[in-house]
Length: 238
Image (cartoon, rainbow, N blue to C red; front, side):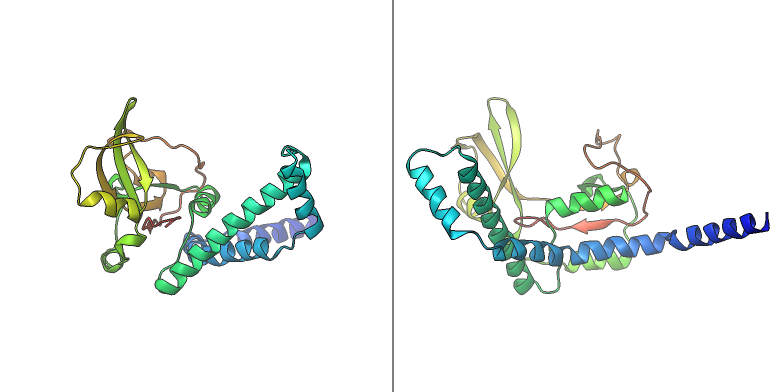
Protein backbone atom coordinates (compact mmCIF):
# COMPACT_ATOMS: atom_id res chain seq x y z
CA UNK A 1 0.00 0.00 0.00
CA UNK A 2 2.85 2.40 0.85
CA UNK A 3 4.53 1.57 -2.46
CA UNK A 4 1.22 2.24 -4.28
CA UNK A 5 0.81 5.62 -2.55
CA UNK A 6 4.40 6.52 -3.43
CA UNK A 7 3.83 5.68 -7.09
CA UNK A 8 0.54 7.61 -7.10
CA UNK A 9 2.28 10.67 -5.68
CA UNK A 10 5.01 10.42 -8.31
CA UNK A 11 2.37 10.29 -11.10
CA UNK A 12 0.60 13.31 -9.57
CA UNK A 13 3.87 15.27 -9.43
CA UNK A 14 4.67 14.40 -13.06
CA UNK A 15 1.15 15.38 -14.14
CA UNK A 16 1.41 18.73 -12.37
CA UNK A 17 4.81 19.40 -13.91
CA UNK A 18 3.53 19.03 -17.49
CA UNK A 19 0.37 21.13 -17.03
CA UNK A 20 1.15 24.57 -18.41
CA UNK A 21 -0.25 27.79 -17.03
CA UNK A 22 -2.36 30.06 -19.21
CA UNK A 23 0.46 32.63 -19.44
CA UNK A 24 2.90 29.91 -20.54
CA UNK A 25 0.55 28.79 -23.31
CA UNK A 26 0.00 32.41 -24.37
CA UNK A 27 3.78 32.87 -24.65
CA UNK A 28 4.03 29.60 -26.56
CA UNK A 29 1.42 30.78 -29.08
CA UNK A 30 3.21 34.10 -29.62
CA UNK A 31 6.52 32.28 -30.07
CA UNK A 32 4.97 30.06 -32.73
CA UNK A 33 3.66 33.09 -34.62
CA UNK A 34 7.01 34.90 -34.29
CA UNK A 35 9.18 31.97 -35.41
CA UNK A 36 6.92 30.47 -38.08
CA UNK A 37 8.82 32.23 -40.88
CA UNK A 38 12.05 30.46 -39.85
CA UNK A 39 10.45 27.03 -40.18
CA UNK A 40 8.83 27.99 -43.50
CA UNK A 41 12.15 29.25 -44.87
CA UNK A 42 13.97 26.09 -43.77
CA UNK A 43 11.32 23.87 -45.37
CA UNK A 44 11.55 25.84 -48.61
CA UNK A 45 15.37 25.70 -48.68
CA UNK A 46 15.35 21.96 -47.96
CA UNK A 47 13.14 21.41 -51.01
CA UNK A 48 15.28 23.70 -53.19
CA UNK A 49 18.52 21.99 -52.12
CA UNK A 50 17.20 18.50 -52.81
CA UNK A 51 19.08 17.19 -55.84
CA UNK A 52 17.24 15.59 -58.74
CA UNK A 53 18.62 12.74 -60.85
CA UNK A 54 19.75 14.24 -64.17
CA UNK A 55 19.19 10.98 -66.01
CA UNK A 56 15.58 10.78 -64.78
CA UNK A 57 14.98 14.44 -65.64
CA UNK A 58 16.16 13.91 -69.21
CA UNK A 59 14.22 10.66 -69.53
CA UNK A 60 11.04 12.41 -68.36
CA UNK A 61 11.58 15.08 -71.03
CA UNK A 62 12.05 12.40 -73.69
CA UNK A 63 8.88 10.63 -72.59
CA UNK A 64 6.88 13.88 -72.68
CA UNK A 65 8.21 14.68 -76.15
CA UNK A 66 6.83 11.35 -77.39
CA UNK A 67 3.46 11.87 -75.70
CA UNK A 68 3.97 9.70 -72.59
CA UNK A 69 2.78 12.47 -70.29
CA UNK A 70 0.80 10.20 -67.95
CA UNK A 71 3.64 7.85 -66.95
CA UNK A 72 4.62 7.71 -63.27
CA UNK A 73 8.08 9.11 -63.94
CA UNK A 74 6.76 12.16 -65.81
CA UNK A 75 4.13 12.83 -63.12
CA UNK A 76 6.72 12.43 -60.34
CA UNK A 77 9.16 14.84 -61.96
CA UNK A 78 6.32 17.29 -62.63
CA UNK A 79 5.29 17.18 -58.96
CA UNK A 80 8.89 17.71 -57.82
CA UNK A 81 9.28 20.70 -60.14
CA UNK A 82 6.02 22.21 -58.92
CA UNK A 83 7.18 21.79 -55.30
CA UNK A 84 10.47 23.48 -56.14
CA UNK A 85 8.69 26.38 -57.84
CA UNK A 86 6.40 26.84 -54.84
CA UNK A 87 9.37 26.62 -52.49
CA UNK A 88 11.23 29.27 -54.51
CA UNK A 89 8.22 31.61 -54.35
CA UNK A 90 7.88 31.01 -50.60
CA UNK A 91 11.59 31.54 -49.90
CA UNK A 92 11.72 34.72 -52.01
CA UNK A 93 8.62 36.08 -50.28
CA UNK A 94 9.99 35.41 -46.78
CA UNK A 95 13.35 36.97 -47.64
CA UNK A 96 11.62 39.97 -49.18
CA UNK A 97 9.60 40.70 -46.03
CA UNK A 98 12.54 39.87 -43.74
CA UNK A 99 14.74 42.48 -45.44
CA UNK A 100 12.08 45.12 -46.07
CA UNK A 101 10.35 44.82 -42.69
CA UNK A 102 12.90 43.35 -40.25
CA UNK A 103 10.78 44.40 -37.26
CA UNK A 104 7.76 42.35 -38.39
CA UNK A 105 7.26 38.58 -38.59
CA UNK A 106 5.72 36.86 -41.64
CA UNK A 107 3.37 33.84 -41.47
CA UNK A 108 1.36 32.12 -44.19
CA UNK A 109 -2.24 30.89 -44.14
CA UNK A 110 -1.33 27.24 -43.64
CA UNK A 111 0.74 28.01 -40.53
CA UNK A 112 -2.06 30.17 -39.09
CA UNK A 113 -4.43 27.23 -39.56
CA UNK A 114 -2.09 24.81 -37.79
CA UNK A 115 -1.72 27.13 -34.79
CA UNK A 116 -5.48 27.65 -34.60
CA UNK A 117 -6.10 23.93 -34.66
CA UNK A 118 -3.40 23.23 -32.07
CA UNK A 119 -4.64 25.77 -29.54
CA UNK A 120 -8.39 25.79 -30.21
CA UNK A 121 -8.52 29.27 -31.79
CA UNK A 122 -10.31 30.74 -34.80
CA UNK A 123 -9.49 33.53 -37.26
CA UNK A 124 -11.90 36.31 -38.23
CA UNK A 125 -12.06 39.99 -39.14
CA UNK A 126 -11.45 42.51 -36.35
CA UNK A 127 -14.89 44.01 -37.02
CA UNK A 128 -16.38 40.81 -35.61
CA UNK A 129 -14.19 40.88 -32.49
CA UNK A 130 -15.78 41.97 -29.21
CA UNK A 131 -12.93 41.17 -26.78
CA UNK A 132 -10.58 43.53 -24.96
CA UNK A 133 -7.75 45.39 -26.72
CA UNK A 134 -5.14 46.55 -24.16
CA UNK A 135 -3.70 50.06 -24.58
CA UNK A 136 -0.18 48.84 -25.37
CA UNK A 137 -1.44 46.50 -28.09
CA UNK A 138 -3.67 49.23 -29.51
CA UNK A 139 -0.66 51.54 -29.81
CA UNK A 140 1.39 48.79 -31.49
CA UNK A 141 -1.37 48.22 -34.06
CA UNK A 142 -1.69 51.98 -34.71
CA UNK A 143 2.06 52.24 -35.35
CA UNK A 144 2.14 49.21 -37.65
CA UNK A 145 2.93 50.39 -41.17
CA UNK A 146 3.66 48.69 -44.48
CA UNK A 147 3.63 50.03 -48.05
CA UNK A 148 0.50 49.82 -50.20
CA UNK A 149 2.10 47.43 -52.69
CA UNK A 150 2.64 44.86 -49.94
CA UNK A 151 -0.92 44.91 -48.59
CA UNK A 152 -3.52 42.31 -49.47
CA UNK A 153 -6.45 43.57 -51.58
CA UNK A 154 -9.99 42.45 -52.32
CA UNK A 155 -11.86 43.15 -55.55
CA UNK A 156 -15.65 43.22 -55.36
CA UNK A 157 -17.26 41.89 -58.53
CA UNK A 158 -20.83 41.24 -59.63
CA UNK A 159 -21.37 38.21 -61.84
CA UNK A 160 -24.19 35.97 -62.94
CA UNK A 161 -24.38 34.30 -59.53
CA UNK A 162 -24.26 37.41 -57.33
CA UNK A 163 -21.51 39.54 -55.84
CA UNK A 164 -18.27 38.23 -54.40
CA UNK A 165 -14.87 39.36 -53.18
CA UNK A 166 -11.80 37.92 -54.86
CA UNK A 167 -8.12 38.35 -53.98
CA UNK A 168 -6.14 40.74 -56.10
CA UNK A 169 -2.68 42.29 -55.99
CA UNK A 170 -1.26 45.80 -56.01
CA UNK A 171 -0.84 45.80 -59.80
CA UNK A 172 -4.57 45.16 -60.19
CA UNK A 173 -5.29 47.82 -57.59
CA UNK A 174 -3.15 50.40 -59.41
CA UNK A 175 -4.92 49.69 -62.70
CA UNK A 176 -8.38 50.11 -61.18
CA UNK A 177 -8.12 52.77 -58.47
CA UNK A 178 -8.03 55.79 -60.82
CA UNK A 179 -10.67 54.49 -63.20
CA UNK A 180 -14.44 54.58 -63.00
CA UNK A 181 -16.23 51.79 -61.19
CA UNK A 182 -18.38 49.08 -62.81
CA UNK A 183 -15.61 48.00 -65.21
CA UNK A 184 -16.16 44.80 -67.16
CA UNK A 185 -14.02 41.75 -66.37
CA UNK A 186 -14.09 37.98 -66.95
CA UNK A 187 -15.72 37.68 -63.53
CA UNK A 188 -18.46 40.24 -64.12
CA UNK A 189 -18.62 43.92 -63.17
CA UNK A 190 -15.89 45.31 -60.90
CA UNK A 191 -17.43 47.57 -58.27
CA UNK A 192 -14.49 48.39 -56.02
CA UNK A 193 -11.01 47.42 -54.90
CA UNK A 194 -10.09 47.78 -51.24
CA UNK A 195 -7.48 46.67 -48.75
CA UNK A 196 -8.18 43.49 -46.85
CA UNK A 197 -9.25 44.36 -43.30
CA UNK A 198 -7.17 43.27 -40.32
CA UNK A 199 -7.79 39.74 -39.11
CA UNK A 200 -7.49 38.46 -35.57
CA UNK A 201 -6.85 35.02 -34.05
CA UNK A 202 -8.70 34.46 -30.77
CA UNK A 203 -11.12 32.11 -28.95
CA UNK A 204 -14.48 31.90 -30.73
CA UNK A 205 -16.24 33.39 -27.67
CA UNK A 206 -14.39 36.67 -28.39
CA UNK A 207 -16.39 37.09 -31.62
CA UNK A 208 -20.00 38.22 -31.92
CA UNK A 209 -21.15 35.15 -33.84
CA UNK A 210 -24.87 35.93 -33.44
CA UNK A 211 -24.82 39.54 -34.58
CA UNK A 212 -22.69 38.76 -37.64
CA UNK A 213 -24.28 35.35 -38.29
CA UNK A 214 -20.94 33.55 -38.06
CA UNK A 215 -20.12 29.85 -37.85
CA UNK A 216 -16.87 28.02 -37.35
CA UNK A 217 -15.63 26.27 -40.47
CA UNK A 218 -12.50 24.25 -40.00
CA UNK A 219 -10.29 24.55 -36.91
CA UNK A 220 -11.83 22.69 -33.97
CA UNK A 221 -11.91 24.42 -30.60
CA UNK A 222 -10.30 22.83 -27.59
CA UNK A 223 -9.01 24.70 -24.55
CA UNK A 224 -9.83 28.41 -24.61
CA UNK A 225 -6.77 30.65 -24.49
CA UNK A 226 -7.44 34.22 -23.38
CA UNK A 227 -5.06 36.01 -25.72
CA UNK A 228 -5.71 37.16 -29.31
CA UNK A 229 -3.18 37.79 -32.07
CA UNK A 230 -3.83 40.52 -34.67
CA UNK A 231 -2.79 39.82 -38.28
CA UNK A 232 -2.07 42.28 -41.11
CA UNK A 233 -2.94 40.68 -44.49
CA UNK A 234 -0.12 40.90 -47.08
CA UNK A 235 0.57 39.13 -50.37
CA UNK A 236 1.12 35.46 -49.58
CA UNK A 237 0.03 35.56 -45.95
CA UNK A 238 0.02 37.92 -42.98
